[in-house]
Image (cartoon, rainbow, N blue to C red; front, side, top):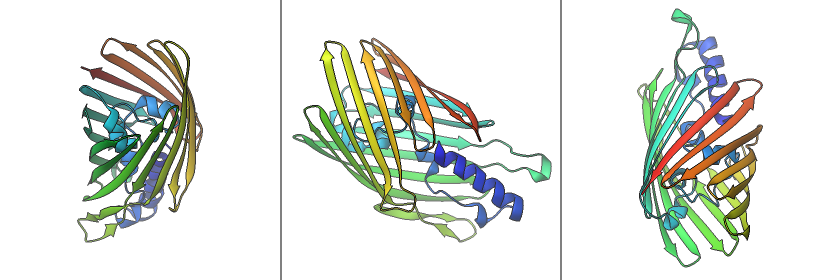
Amino acid sequence: MRTLGRTLVLLGVSLACAGLGAMAREGVGDLFNVGVSSRALGLGGAFTAIADDEAGVLYNPACLSRYRGIGLSSLYVLGFAGVGQGAVVVAVPYAAFGLLFLDSGLIGDGEEGFRYASQGAVLGVGVPAGPVSVGVRWRFLRVSTPFVGSGWSLDPAVAVDVEFLHVGLLWEGAASAPVAYDDGSEEDWEGGLRLGVAATLSPMTGVTWTASFDALGLLGLSPSIAAGIEAWIGGVGARVGYDGTGLACGLSARFAGLEMDWAYAARDDLGDSHRITLALRF
């Protein structure tokens, strides 16, 4: 959420001052930072250590080692003055694949307006080795307007589960090909470590409490933090989180193999955002 706002502000300022061109290219990989899960977004994005559903493909592929069954989830959000973003993820034991898109729509009028659109693919694999799991995430980004370019990143990950304690680590941009644009210019992926720590307690049958904390962009140019608390009572879940910019919250309902997650975030500069994820699991 924070990075989406930064991208649009930078695009707006750059394009207003200089027109279409390389000056507008900021925030490589921001499409993936927006997320694929309303549950994770309701936790403020603090999901690196507890990515136990389809969203593990993005937040920590090592966690896919404990995924069971077959799952299909979809996310769509319309917010921030008409910016549209969506994702579809398919997961099976040990692996998941997702497709994402971001489209600002036309901002401005006529020749003074501009539009930013990008598409992405993400593939994650996780393998268990006792309490430790290892994984890798591959991301592919394509920018389609107002300029054209593409590139990829390969990101290793680790997850550790010891009783009620969970630890996750993701090395973003460990190996990558910079996004190469049609005018010959290039832009590198932003690198850094994402570290997550979480604790899960179950005081009684059917009741689970989880507190999670993430440190993002460690060793990178723009480190930040995220934190959240989640509670499940039977098939009903609720959560609240902080994403480094502001507060978020969310609700969930599970019935048989169907889950619906809703998240909400309010921003003074970009307006409100509602997100809904539907997941079907077999």
